[in-house]
Length: 71
Image (tube, rainbow, N blue to C red; front, side, top):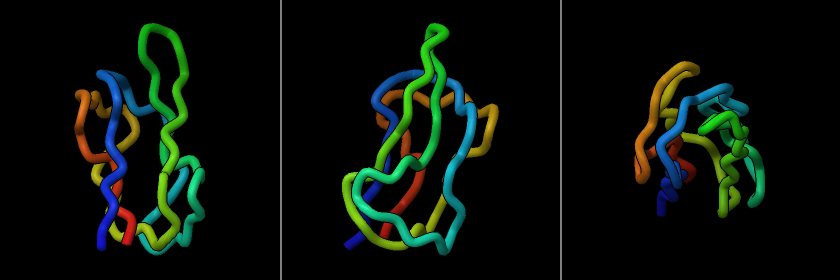
């Protein structure tokens, strides 16, 4: 079953740490977000393979937006 990695807040995407096909463990950083001059790492809660990366560096994401999909 797929796991969606989502943003918890409105933020800018500073960097993306994974690409499609990467194998990740639970706790792996998926992306780095910036909000109100704070940098917030986004971690996956589940191990698996990255099947989709739905954002690009520079994107503005809203709370609940899907950043990546882990299978």
